[in-house]
Length: 466
Image 1: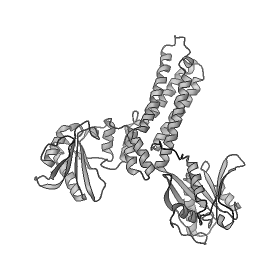
Image 2 (image 1 turned 45 degrees about the vertical axis):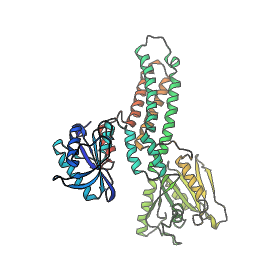
Image 3 (image 1 turned 180 degrees about the vertical axis):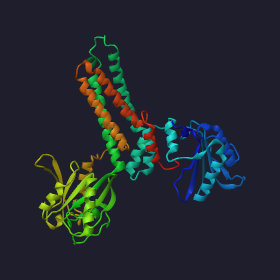
Image 4 (image 1 turned 90 degrees about the horizontal axis):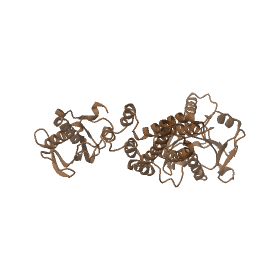
């Protein structure tokens, strides 16, 4: 804990701008009841009853009313931060809120009251064991959620669903570690540990549970981050028409003139609650036009960062030599969907299929008409399949990239532990060490093993007042 984590802090807790209600929040830090009492007397002229809404004037330094509103007092530890908290809920004008904020700072100056940093109230809640780190992050995720599915998943994380699964994993790892350590401490006991304690069975159960949690977390990460989908192909194959069809709006200019799109056009859409960041790009071809060259270069930059590439072709010609050259430049490991557009001009019905590649692997292919809207549903379904989305995934929790990294790291250590368990007794100490490292990786998710530097990065991304 940093020294500043015990300072009394204050901030406007509502969003900037004008609103019906504005909230100024104070958390008393180590000063405790003293600063809370001083602020109550200075701002309201009375001592507030705990957890009781009082309609009072908010007073300036001369005892005149700046505003009138609801004052609330939450004694520690029964508050959001776990400290003594005072909240003043008045009118949401920016000027009046600033006046009330400054009055709080003046009244609490003798106690070192200062403006809160971004996320500092939630950081206090974490440090005072009101929330673990995964729950604290869920507060920010709930505020930033852009879809109903993301809101529900963030709510589950805030309620502790993700944390409970992690704690169960940690408890199982700790139990297995205890058995291993006991065997290491008492080697004279002629007991075949791996058989008598069923270490392999326990480890297999833990790994299966970890795989399940990782699967749920991946779904949550999709809800939070979404997928970057880049439309790529030669000019005049219907990329802009497909963007408009997916978005359900005329976002891009569509003409019969090749090279109409010179720069990227981005639009975020939702499919089953998953945000898809669809990017329409300049057509890929050899050109002497300097402006178009710049657009093509930006197209390849977007392709290099894509989660999914939709390679658009004209259904009347299929793959040409130029398309083969484009496909050869796609980055390895990035899923590619071959989209044959303009089926309305071929008389062939829309369809979706999977093609076997000569060198192994598979390639998805969708035939559609962006102009007529036929087959758009098939493309949406294919994007969901690539994302790994499950239609009945109602139990997912919102997760961040650092959670996925920690879960994968724990999985790698458990895999190493399994490898050592299959060796001789001399590998038992390596088995124990891999279990310890897996436990540390899991604990980093909930903050039981987390550096102050990481905490600073996490909470600095919160909004001020939260």
